[in-house]
Length: 298
Image (cartoon, rainbow, N blue to C red; front, side, top):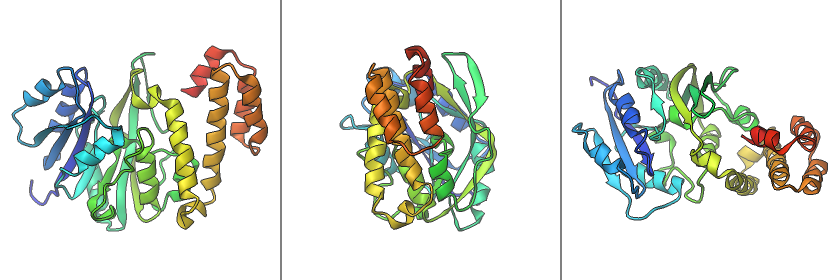
């Protein structure tokens, strides 16, 4: 551990017994060894606790939540237990490749880099398919406008320099359950440089029970709130692609209307949109069968 800064890994869990061991093992197998896992159990009722407690590694620190909370409020509670100079994230249904931390930590030698990310594999366990999440290069440097245009930061690869976070404040907006990492990344991008790695360094599992998949309408409502809140933020709202978020919100409202069988309402959203690729997508979706629209929404 010579000259290795401590990395605090937030591992949030709610009934994650199926995957926990693989996630923890992928951290233990890291070639970079100075880390701690802050395991925050959001009142699981399965065998999650006993699995974690079966490990004797003192770097794994188990905490049972006093009350069940929204996901990003739980992440804030976990963050409050951290000690590291760097903060990383790994949910129990994801995993890292062994050299993930070793590859990313040297990027922070540039003191203007406040956060880092990498590409990652997507493991669709329903369709039995694997693919790389980002087919195009992930932007680096001052990336605020690029990330507003096309958000590419996977939470499982995100590392944040503690000094880049506001002091005496929780990093996440606790009212979010779905888009809290997007909110954090955009706030970081407004002030700091991003260092990205194009190679996949983790595996994100899609299994139908991912929170983002289960709560898509909530995610769009949160994004709408986020847009209204950040309209008053001069740095973010003056970014050329800020308005694209509004277009995306309307697009998802239209798709949700189609999924509810309200085609006339969907057409209303189509008329409301400025011309863009999303307007064209919504127009095409208005004439598609429900099953195809559900695939588009995913």
